[in-house]
Every structure is written in C-alpha cells, then in structure tokens.
Amino acid sequence: MEYILNKVIGIGKKVLPFCLFTFLPLNMQAQRLAITRTTIDVGRTGYCIPVTATFELRNKGLMRKLQIKDVKPDCSCTKVEFPKGEIGIGDKFTIKMTYDARMLGHFNKQAAIISNGSKEPVYITMTGVVLADLQDYAGSYPYDFDGLLVDKDELEFDDVKKGERPTQEIRIMNNSSTVMHPNVLHLPPYLSAVVTPDRLPPGHSGKVLFTLDSEKVRDFGLTQTSIYMAKELGEKVQSDKEIGVSAVLLPDMQGVRQENAPQLAISDSVLNISFEGKAKKTGEIVLYNPGHSTLEISSLQMFTSGLKMTLGKRTIAPGGTTKLKVTAYADQLAKVRTRPRVLMITNDPKRPKVVITINTN
Image (cartoon, rainbow, N blue to C red; front, side, top):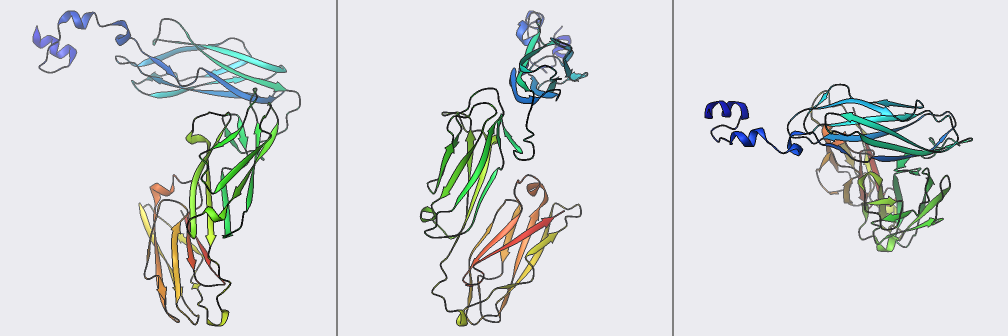
C-alpha cells in the first residue's frame, strides 16, 4: 500500500495518509485564474474605428492545467480572442476584446470567461468613449502612459555651460474618459517642472516645461537620471512611465589662448560594429593631438549600457596619438532605449565635447 501511494502521489519515501490525498481542499484542486486588471479604460476612439483592450492573465492553479472553454461578450459588437489550448501551471496569457465603435458616446462592454478554473464565470470589462470627430494623435503623441499620451520619452540638455538655465518641453494629452491632474515624480535637485494646465479633462492637451539649473549640476560631462510621469497626485512610480533625462555640462574655455591650445583629431566620429553572430565585438577609434600643448581627456562616458571602453591614455602630448577601444555586448544593447554613444570632454577649446556614435548590427 505504501508503494502504491508513493507512485500515485510522487513524493518519494515520505508517505501522506490516503485520506489527505482523497480530500485535498477544493482551493488546492481547482485552478486560480489571476487577472492583472479586470477593467481597462481604452480612452477615446473615433466612430467606426475599432478599439482593443488586452487583458493579462495567469494560471495560478496548483494541480492541473487551465483550459479556457469560452469567452462570451455581452453583445455582437464585441469580438474576443483567447487561447484555445491548455495553459500550464504558472503560465501567463492574454485575452483581447475589440469593440467595433459603431455607436457614439461612452461604452461599457463585458465578457464572461468560462474555464475549468472556477465554477462561476469570471468577468472582464472594457470602457471608453466614441467620438464623431477624433483627431489622429498617433504621430504627435507616440507614447501612451496608461491614457496619458506624451510626445517624447527622453529629454537631452546638450552643450550646457555653468550659469545657464535651458528649458525643454513635453506635450501631453488626456486620452482617457476621466479628468487627470498630471505631475512629474522623482525630479532631481537640478531639474524643475511646471505642468500646464494642472487639470486636464478628457480629450484636452497640455504641456510640461522643464528647466535645468546648471549651477546645481555637480560634474562636467554627462549626468543622467530618470523621471516619471503620473496622472494624479500621490500616484506611485511606475517603470512603464519612465522618461530618461541627460545633461552635458561643458567646461569654460574662454581663458584659453587659441595659438597655444591643444587640438583633438579623431579617425572617425562613427564606429560601426558587426556582431556576426557573436555575443560581443570590439572596435577602435584613433585619437591624435596636432595642437601645441598637451591634450587632456577629462571625462569619458557612455550614454547607454552595453558598452565597455578602454582608453590608452588620458593625456596626449603634441603630435602624439592613443586608441579608444569600444566593446559592444549584443544582449545588453538589445534592451537599451537610446542610441549607443560615447562622450568625451576635453581641453580643446574648439572641441570641448566629442560624441562618438556606435552603430551595431
């Protein structure tokens, strides 16, 4: 009997009582259908422009694979897509609802998920509003932060000098069906933001004006950070609403005499690296000083991860050369959002900043 139970239950030498195997609690035998969000607001769409809500789900059952038997929408105007095969324990999957948008005004559409994961159907809901005349914002607002559309997800303050206060602007638009109060989270001490207007009704646009205080930037060269957009005051930081910020602070070269200055010449400002199926590859750039005094490279930095740099020497005598070796890592570069670049800050008054672009394939 002990051998039979071992084979059936699969627990090796340790044997569970037969009654425990037979009368496991129902919540351990049944599947658990976990849904990230049961209601999704798809925002605004135009008349007869279908709109889709994608629901993320997971099989959190412990004993058997999950089977979605059917997903039944509450009207023929809504179509659904769901996996037809078995879903393994712990596996994630999606269910899509698409509304044909053939009636103007606000809509609230439901669908019932019928599965072996629960005795009763589980309901998902998509909401939104259909407008008669909808402006196409796809080109001007390419980034969707959960209904808050923005026109860019990066801010770059280039060639900033001490004492300057450059500004940049991000345009925003409320594509949801509720009022928003947009704000910016995790601002560093050297960056301020003003949101106009502070109350953004559905379908309305606004802007965020960012000002960089160069006096509060600590070091010359590249300074990078991340800030986060929020739809409401008190909202938590979310990684999918990240905006990258970079600032390049240049040294003051006004007191340097041009006739005695060093000069930086480089073999190329673009480095092309082909992986050819390899995990990493290295390329070289030659640096040369045709000037009349020692060239100093005070800062050497990367705009992205996925690169490793080796500089032969940081000071180059007149007429001297050195090499910059850049190793690119394919798996890391595949994950970065910004262009791979290398930044050098020098004491050449004509070229205090040099950017080398890394092209990979």
